[in-house]
Image (cartoon, rainbow, N blue to C red; front, side):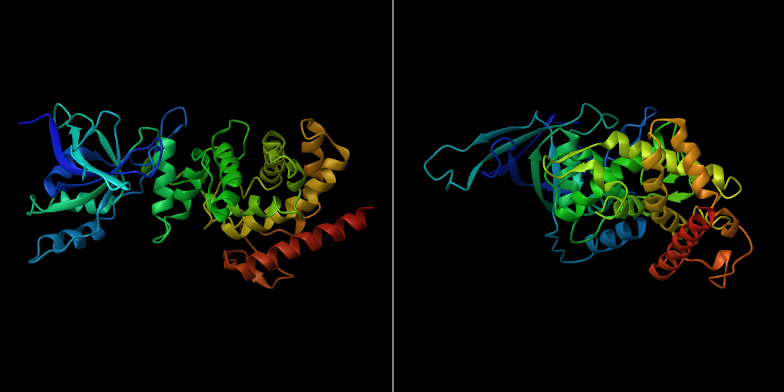
Length: 380
């Protein structure tokens, strides 16, 4: 490599007091030298790594075809997270700044070899960057906005924010939310706690869902093991956190604190009892078990509010009595459930005709709750 540093004229934007922001240009062929893609994954300890979704080959191909065409105008720039080792030297003279920006020279260090990690990470524009690495027009100038932040939490926060117009895959957003500690938009903020809980349920050794939940970081070799979509479980938990739900009392609205430990324990006790009540239906692909299907997760999740409300009136959630009581309550609905075969007679529908639609979720959950309350009254 002929030089260890790329130098570019740049504008430093006076926007954030502690996170420098620069606007500059790179040649198309330089992007691959400077920036890497941080793919979302998990290490052996279960810690979340990266934040980017998988490559979309067709999208990359379309961009590349345009880049290699005649008279290219490519204003769609990249957003990079730059390392703290970049250096900016402002130009001298009275006209170097207008109070909003300062003109100068940005120096970006390059890796010692092609195999070494790149200094920057792509926060927005990974599909464009992959096409830029392949284009014949390697000298084409590309606009870049770069902010200096090596903290993954800051990078993930920006990644979520810049991808609001073209929505990210729901499971990718759900898995990233627990790692973001800055103030979020209301809609994303409401999903953060359920996402944290689903991450815990997928990793904790005492959880019946351990290793069963499909997330954005699920590797191809694990695809056959995961049977529950994280979004279905997140939605079920979201509903139980509403004022009418059994989890709501553990949110202290006056001081903003949340008893996450107790909420997690309620979920573990209830869903463990669900697993043990319906062992023949647990852990199967949703094509073979509607309990693992979105319609089953959402519907039996709504039943949790009724069952666990009763359980918590007579048992400490941390005692074995809570599990035993949950099993006894679920036994009231078990005879009328058909997760893997047969027909739901009152609903006049075959087990495998149930779909993850609002109508079927509402129909099935109403049946389960109605059946539970009727059986409870009959047993009294």
